[in-house]
Image 1 (cartoon, rainbow, N blue to C red):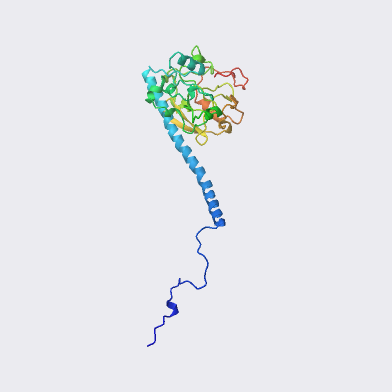
Image 2: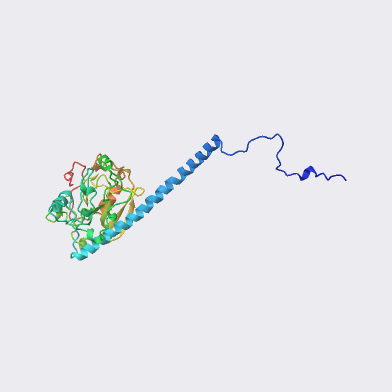
Length: 312
C-alpha cells in the first residue's frame, strides 16, 4: 500500500525556511530611541506648564483660606478688646516691645536676609497679638510658594522664612508712626483704631501677602502723596496676591503692571521703587483699599516729594 503524502498546503505557515538565519529583533535602534525621547520631551513641554499653573492655583486657594483666617481672627480680637484693633507697629516699635518682654504687636518678628532668629522663630508668631487666635498653628503665616532665601540663609541650611503676610499700616495702633492720632506716613487719611471706624470694611484690606523683597516688619505701608512702592504685594500665584478685608472676606487680585511683579532679589532689591506713569493701575488699586480721606491731602509728587523719606 502506498503511504499517504500530505499536501504542502497543510504545512504550518510559520515553519522556518531552510537557510533563513536572520536574527529576531529584541531592541530599539538608536534612531527609534531618539524619536521616542523627542516625543516624550514634546509631551512634557506641553504638560508641565499647565501642571505648574494648576499647582499655583492650588497654593493660591490654600493661601486665600489662610488670609480669610486672619480676617476672622482680627474680628474676634476686636470683639474681645472692645472693638479695638491689634497693634500694628513698624520694626522699631516691634523690637522695643519684644525686648521689654511685651508681645503687643499683631505679629512680633522683624525679618531680614541675615541669620536673625526672627526669620525662623515661630514662637514670635504665636506670642501675643493674633497668635492665640490660631491655637498655636503657624503655617497660616506663610505661603508655601515663598521659599526665597539669601545666599547666607541657604548656606546655613534654611529652607524658608516663617512669614509671608503683613497688615495694612492704616489699621491698628501704629506706635512710633503716630502723632496725635494721625499716621505720619499718610497724614490726611484715616488711621483706623477700632473695627467700627472702618466706613466700608468690605473695601478696606486688612492683610496681604507681601513680596519677599519688602517684607520685614508686619506693617505694610505705601503713601498716597507720591508714586512709589515702599512695600510690594506678592505675586506668587500666577502673577497675583491674596488679600483679607476688614469685613472678614478674602479675595485674589491678579496684577496688571509688570513693575508690580519683579522677581525676588535677596539683598539687592531696589525699594522704594518709582511707579511710572502708565504703570499705576495696581498701585491705585492697592491705595484705594488702604484708607479714606479725612482732609484734603497735598498734591501728589515724585519720590523726592515732601513725604518721600522712608517710614520703615
